[in-house]
Image 1 (tube, one colour):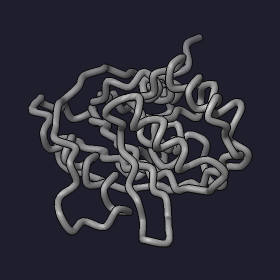
Image 2 (tube, rainbow, N blue to C red):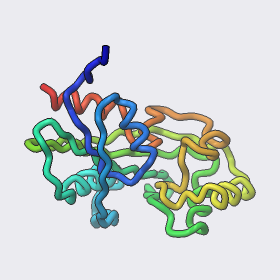
Image 3 (cartoon, rainbow, N blue to C red):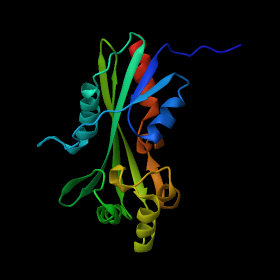
Length: 199
């Protein structure tokens, strides 16, 4: 006998990320895929810690489709923040391999913050939040960095790396918080949000 979904929601993931698609499909709920293009430049004066949720909300607002009563639009954005003596540096997607190598050099041997912002939008309400994880890298050699950038081309990833691929296997020594937040979608928070929407 087929077991019915634990919640009645049908999800629409507004993201081109195959990683987020994989994660959301793990909730055993129907998932449709769509996408939207927005300018991801943070507005002047916005604290770096708020950028991820701001962009997730911006993506939700930019989507022009129609939501049925049982549908939830899911949007997300991930940022990498490195605290330095000169303040917090926001590492978004690198523009080219040289910038990707520069970012990984900055992260080498240090702990940084990964913040994933999420927006859940229904036909009647919008719920946004962000989740933070701390990630520590071992010291990377120049050869490590050059190989990773050339072989895995991480130009579509904040901070120039994906925790689920080679650099995650070989360089990440510690994660404080949810692995899935680092991967791009804090699944425990998404589920909590869906439960809240069901009430």
